[in-house]
Amino acid sequence: MLIRDVGELILIGRRPDALNHIKERIETQFDGRVRVATDLDLLPQADLILTVTSNLGTIIEPWHLKAGAVVCDVSRPRDVSRQTVNERGDVLVIEGGMVEVPGRVDFGFDFGFPPGRAYACMAETMILALEGRFESYTLGRNIHVEQVKEIAHLATKHGFRLAGLRSFERAVTEEQIDRIRTNTRRIRAGLLRT
Image (cartoon, rainbow, N blue to C red; front, side):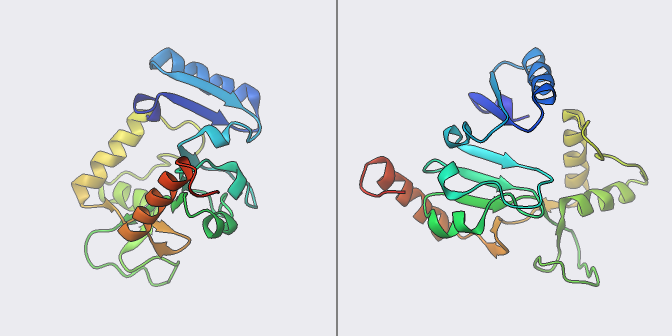
C-alpha cells in the first residue's frame, strides 16, 4: 500500500529470499522503486519507517535515523530504543496500533492505554465479531491489500477510529511535532547537530 505514496520502498529483513519475493510481488503490481537489505545500512536514507519485528530487544538506535525521520513502531517489545527519543529531538517515534473503540467500553483491565482505546489486533477481533465473522482474518504473513481495505471499511462502519499519536505511552502533542520540525530544519541548515 505504501508504494503508491512514496518514491522508493526499502525492505529490510533477515531472509533475502523472502525480501526478494515481496519485492517481486510489489514490482509486478505497482510502479515504484524497491530495494532490499538484510542489515540496517539503508535505514538512514528513510524518511518514513514502519517497523514490525518479533525481535526481543531494540534494534533501532539514534544513529540509524536521519534528521526528520518518522518511525512507526508497531512491535512489542519495541524495536526503537528509548535512547532514540531521548537523544534525537529531530525524530518522531510513534506507536502503531492504537484504536479508539466506539461507545463506553470497560475492558476490565489496564493495558497502558487511555480509556476507550485498544490495540488494533483487539479492535480487529471486535469488528469481526460485530460482523458475525469468527475467523483468523490477518493471522500470519499472507495479508493482502484487499483485507486491509476491507477491515478499514468495517471499522468505519462500526465507529472505530485511529486514536491519537503516542510515543512511549505518552500522547504526542502539536507542540512536540513543531519542535521536531524546527530541530530538523536547523539540522538541515547546519545550525544544529544530531
